[in-house]
Length: 201
Image (cartoon, rainbow, N blue to C red; front, side):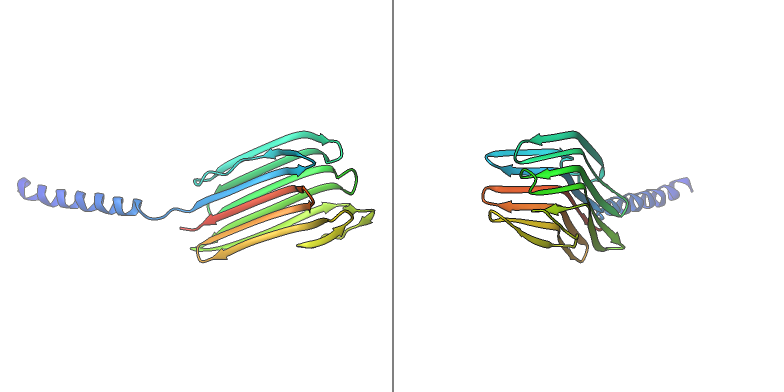
């Protein structure tokens, strides 16, 4: 009687093992993201400050900061902070800087922040993002913050405020928010960039 039960137990164990292996092949939610408080290329100078680096596909938490940055004539800023994280059903990033002064006072702001998020609802991905900017002044004029607002400035310089680019489709979603993006002849400066993306299981 014992010898008759053994084959049944073996078959049952084999079935459980096979199911476990199959379940292990099921796609898991994967994450990606990065936050950078400052990226600048201007007047032959390139610099990056408070960059979290890329978030692993398995998720986790990254954070970094810098007390201040000062490149005369190009950029100065204080209290630069960035974080990126991924867990559960959400990938998110935040970045900020204070007392921002770009291009020798052409653009200034008291506080510059960005936020991005990519999340799953079941197997469907969605994204959201925003920028918060306090007391933004460009070429002496106060600027009201609005998504993807382009402002033309002297010297062929363009300021894009709350620059948002996103893509969603099915189980994938990606978004990047640049609170301030300044371009011009030999100039490319981004303040408070937050990127998040996710692939839902």
